[in-house]
Length: 162
Image (cartoon, rainbow, N blue to C red; front, side, top):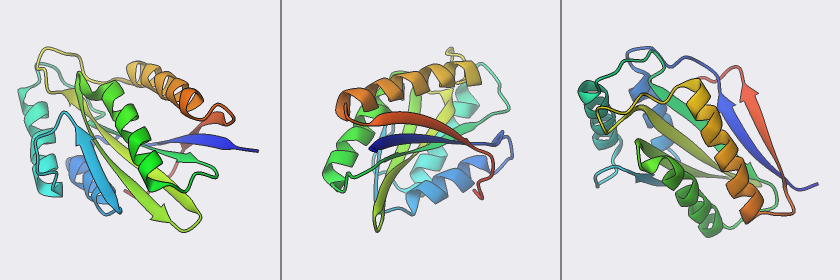
């Protein structure tokens, strides 16, 4: 059976070093990219940009960053997955910063995403769980369009050491 899996990593990500931890984790993969960010996309510059959005926001939230991954069975083309990453990142980009990477584990290529809960538009509400769930539904739709023979699944992973 062909599957596309969206793994949403649990955690409130409210700790003071949440940006550093998640963005460092994402930056250690093979290919990186992003939307609504200034280049160069170094770990330090992206962390600084996430803090700038948080500092300029007119709103507050405890959940500072969203971390999820996407894997597609039997797809071993890094170019195809990077195009998929860009399509997913663009879903958020009109309001939220997105940093993503492609991890090339043998036999299991997959994408990681770190979405800033604070918009770079100060007046826009933070990315809350109900809003994030709407984005997950959009991501599922993108996966169905890109891989019509795959069955998309959303998994909630309780533990993650980031």
